Length: 274
Picture 1 (cartoon, one colour):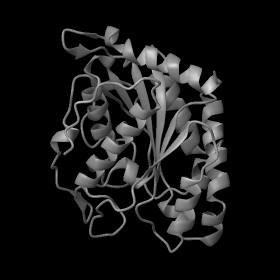
Picture 2 (spheres, rainbow, N blue to C red):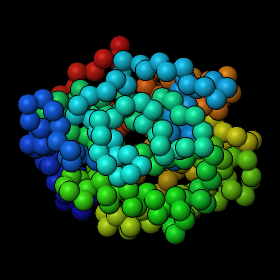
Picture 3 (tube, helix red, strand yellow):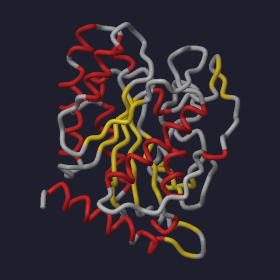
Picture 4 (cartoon, rainbow, N blue to C red):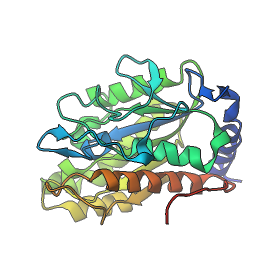
């Protein structure tokens, strides 16, 4: 057996036993299953945001649930509601991202798995170099992730959606693969989880002409236990950069499917998708 398989088997057993965290239909303050949400604006969520104003419409797949918690900017757990990044990505207007659709889909796939904790860390307009080890964004991610499991729980995965800003410069795009792999390795080191599952999103759009170079770097990442979910073709808003709210729902469900596929044994699914 490989170390990766043993890690996933252990995570599966722990994930399936997560219902010990819930009583009387409500989650405890410290979620059992923790997921880090990081990257730039499409992870922070711009679904439903037009000309800097969020329309306030929350898709049914993104509804709140007492079993889904959110780590606030002041490191306290609260019931998760949209927009998830409202107090993290504070310089831009946040809307719908993939996080709530992901969490609801995971719970739907296995309602007995226990509470889910989402740790928003994404900041719009950021380049991969701004997430390098020692930077403010890297340090904030590590600090928030550690705080999330201080009173219990396990970090199940990092959900990463970033790279649009790295499509402007050819040099940034050319170096993206090495910079990304270094960042992911450093995050695993910082969290003392050498094979932490990572689900990264391959770009649906970009700010510059080098989208395909960055996409190929993402699709060709050469690290163990890193899986890529391709957002290409998902609906974009009029700015041709940010995913629509419905596209974010689709992405969240795609990420949940990718997560379930990593578990050593399949869980029963009750998918709402046609």
